[in-house]
Length: 154
Picture 1 (tube, rainbow, N blue to C red):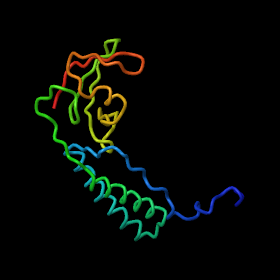
Picture 2 (cartoon, one colour; picture 1 turned 90 degrees about the vertical axis):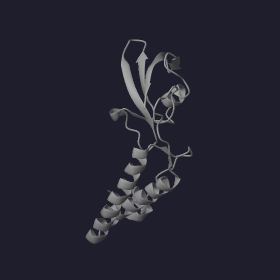
Picture 3 (cartoon, one colour; picture 1 turned 120 degrees about the vertical axis):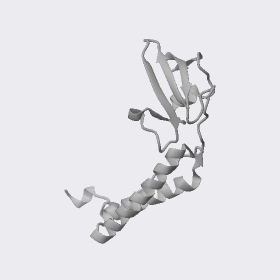
Picture 4 (tube, rainbow, N blue to C red; picture 1 turned 120 degrees about the horizontal axis):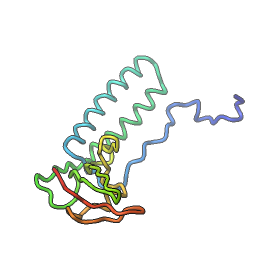
């Protein structure tokens, strides 16, 4: 490739952009806080390996991730789930039924914990925002349809 089509920063692995930090409060479940702590320990090991191996690109990526997760741990506000939830709130598992009768469950968790494939939905996602404060039996409009809240679990 011609040098005319590269940026100087392409040659410097130390200039990775920072990972954006959400402007929302950093609510986390107890498990979410533990996951951040585990991730930090893992990153520290990766950093040591990158330094030992002289891999400056890997070192820059890991250092950036360490900065991000250190900030996230410092700002984490642990919210324990309610033992008997009566309304949709942070940490609660919500079971919904859509208009076609399909049921789906999600637990509302912190942004760094979210993983839709595992049924973990960020509390700041549009769906979670539409559900917050509602109770079983309520119908909530979302996108082009309606969702019925069937049950809540801790």
